[in-house]
Image 1 (cartoon, rainbow, N blue to C red):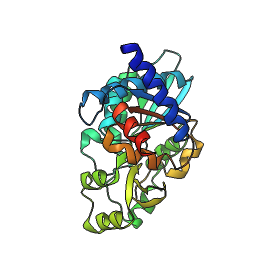
Image 2: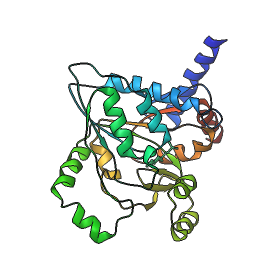
Image 3: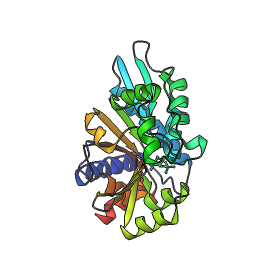
Length: 255
Ligand code: BG6
């Protein structure tokens, strides 16, 4: 039975890879909406996949969220001949401390026996503050590291869930509703065509910078994220997706 189930998952992976135009898909059994432990299983799969990608020198940018936090929890030490430097992909996006990119980044680095650099920035930045902060030497240095990241590990969220979790203003909530936003990643919101309809202004990796990375790995699962995953994957360079059966089945049913 187990063998058949695994063979079934491999077929699902192939179908998803083709339909979403991805470079690779890894599906773990279960649905993280129903069973939170499945997030750790995705985390484990993400760590295993990441390890295949590591070279002598690695700058790894990571986002926030409970899923990437689960990746951090599953991290294990790298080889002695590998330099690992972890950086947060973007500055504050309105998450609880345990779900912030900075926190996840330092946890991951400690578990991997690597190093980390952090961005200490407030969540909501006015244009003036933003423009002066990006000139700060300390910030500039970390930003350059972020932009040079060869590996990016990120989460994907359902647009409404993320906007509410960030306590977004009613004006923003209305805008997202009006623009029919379904997905969120890196602080950007997307409609189901994968078009950006809104973004949170903060320092760090911008969507355009992704084209400079060699390896982009999205980790997102649960049937409730199926639409968001499909929408985000229409945007930009080819990615690796680590997901679960719940999201994969729902995704394929809607294609
Ligand atoms: C946030 C990221 O921290 O986590 C978002 O900034 C992402 O881009 C979200 O969509 C995903 O969160 P979770 O908890 O569903 O993994």
